[in-house]
Image (cartoon, rainbow, N blue to C red; front, side):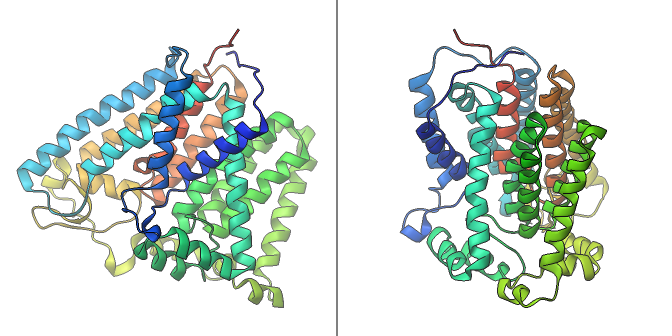
Length: 412
């Protein structure tokens, strides 16, 4: 595996980091009087495709497992698209969000942009550095919003549609949040920066970069409890990789985490100043039970019953009411995929998807890249437990962009 050594200017990193930020943290421009269909991600992709087309040097996606698995995922979704169309024809479109829209958006905004990132970036490290800078920008928004609530209110008013504004503003008392980054969905977006800092913490083998991972993990945990799980898993993987020689560094990291958590869960006056009780509720308020309750939404949850029909056929929708009158209102990717495709297709879907993810882990000859891709795969798994992650486009795109860039040859 060979990497390019071409150095980029600071201006290039700033511009690419801004584009990466707008791609990951998607919001629409409804507050500016523009159509809700015009989102930051869609604008960025137009810029990326134009830039990649201008820059292109006949560089095709590399031969190897990364491209093979990307094609496999694409073929799978061509089949799923026709399958979903058959369901809609047979049972009607219904009311709500259907999986056909999700598949089309995945093709346009998740799979196709992999080519753009492969054209525009020279190596894995440059790609991960840009993601990290975008994450640090978001961290600034989160911390500033926490200290100065008026700043968070300004972000919500300026960059949210009316529906999104009420959702984000109503959750700021229980969650820390930034720009298009709040609750579990926002935490998973923010976790892309944890992948970058994980890579650097291992590569640089320095307490400074381990501390960076810890700080970002704490901020992710402030956004949603999911961030705490991701951060702890990352620290465990770092400790297993670094070995006993770096035991003191790991202890130092855990001490920092413990101190920060203790600070935010204490009864000192500053806690009321921050008006943040998420960590306190998790640690002292039977967090496991609350986690499960949040996942199923109590009485508001409608999971299609596991009948013979649901084993073989789905409803074609991920939320709303199907053409046959079946209500669907669930959280988490697994339940949404089950509702849309039926049990058998759902099981096959996840077997194929995670087999392709893990094939990239197994195929990597660079142990650092292998470990980073494995950490990324774990985050996708956690994300599917909490949210409709795979069909949120950005995570699949960044995963395959990372995997393909790992094969990019040296330029002369």
